Image 1 (spheres, rainbow, N blue to C red):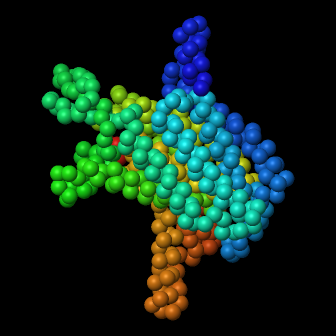
Image 2 (cartoon, rainbow, N blue to C red; image 1 turned 180 degrees about the vertical axis):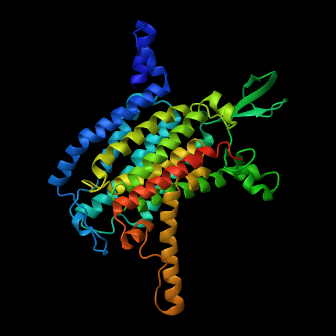
Length: 413
């Protein structure tokens, strides 16, 4: 909202400094600062309120070192993260931008699902929380909103280089690279970035080329299926990773910084042309949202780092996972998620492998056997005697390595 105010002031009164709000970099910086202030200043107040309401974590004794001491620690702290994301975004981003609108919907939608889950656990004294099928329904519902909007909304386009005569009914722009002229069009497309591939592009529609020349009419179905899988996998991965103090929050901050970089280069014609990646018009505003997201995660670490004064609960973890998935899809970097969100992926896989192997061996040998001492993976290392602060730090280091590798893939083909 401040963007519109200061743009109006700059236009009509030429106030010094008002023009700064035209720059995405300035608004991103302000979003980070405000997010940090909100989460650190108001975080302590929320913790006091949660304690007064006796909104404490119920801990099951799983034999983990230091686990029982966490009994009664305030949960639902994800509300702090939601505040740190929504307020700066509403103030500094262009709220008529379709990408920002979708990210705001994602934040509120997934935060609401997580809040209901935490509410049932805390106030209804039901340890299982919201039934899994309802969580899945919520995740699928969000995925359908995102996928449908991206497929049909007129402002969600990609800029592609074309040869004459142009096939699409869109305006034709002329550009010059050195002594060569080339033409581009902003068109609707199901194309996305794919790592380690020569042209760095993949079209969902072409998955169904086996159906002949009419395969494009099924492209919406394929695209929606991919979006559903990505949203559910990443949000559940973030949820599973939120098991020890600071792990999910710190890992998400690293991912958020990387997504901000990817959004900036994808929404900037100069960088997109230099890196030879697709330019996505209007997506630059997402950098501001990413700044607020990173600020909220880092600010929450003030209270969530070991020993944690508050847990984010599903209110935070489901929202974080949904945000990361939706953001990556919108900047068309979702196929980089297995690399960028490698920590989430490994945590997910460790649970799947553990459960599957236990069921298989129980059926075959009459007793269940385990691959890990405990799953998700971070609990395996706790069982091995590692202090949780050391586990978190090492997972962060792995996350940083994966983030760097993700950025490198833009040129590694």
